[in-house]
Image (cartoon, rainbow, N blue to C red; front, top):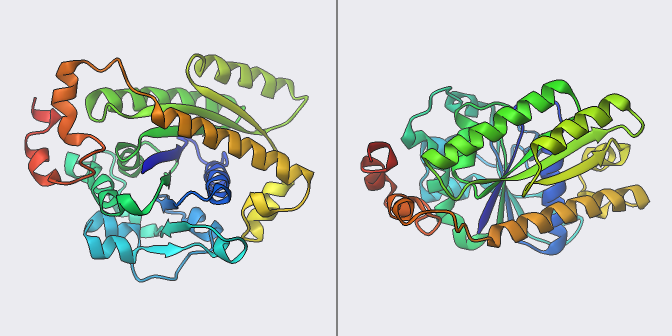
Length: 297
């Protein structure tokens, strides 16, 4: 099982839209997919047609990441009524705001990782929709992730937010979870012919040069139409929907390739230091490991 967070440090850029587009691509491909809705606005749960159908949710999981709680918080998406496939949702809740501390403890940061360890064999891919901030919930999602896809708009404020996010990801990777990497950026709501957009796109492409993925997504009404109907974009009719679906297919392909890459830059010392926190453990023995983890080395 691989885990990808979809994040932005600025609200209103279409972060959940991108998360749902990736979920649609995974659903269409037949991947066993779990969407974790960490955003207190719960838009991913609503978009997947899974809101309010369970007594447990992700806030309960963060409070008590036990087997029964984790399974009770996960429900099937209504997308399965449109097309056969396997896509589930760990339901969001406004109560997750109680966990969005600016200075979360180490124990708090590992709770989602611990919870996902209990369903590792049930899914091929986990997509985490994080809040538009750098507080506890986003960091908790990142600690549980292998890769992070950032979402931005071609605006000065989004460029600044993307730069902050990259720096925060690198700091977290160096300090706590070395498997973590930024996958790249989706530049959303691009208006063709806008000089301002072209300039900001250039800034973002310069920021994400090198090994990072950079995807442009035009502003299209078809995305909102599909979401409003509770449908995955891959099942929406029309050439425009097919073009958008192809973009999300490409992003998913890039993520799957990135998951397979071996990090050859990690030293033997770091390997030993962080072995307890590797994907193999998936939260097992986490209480014991936290007592002697990286923070005390």
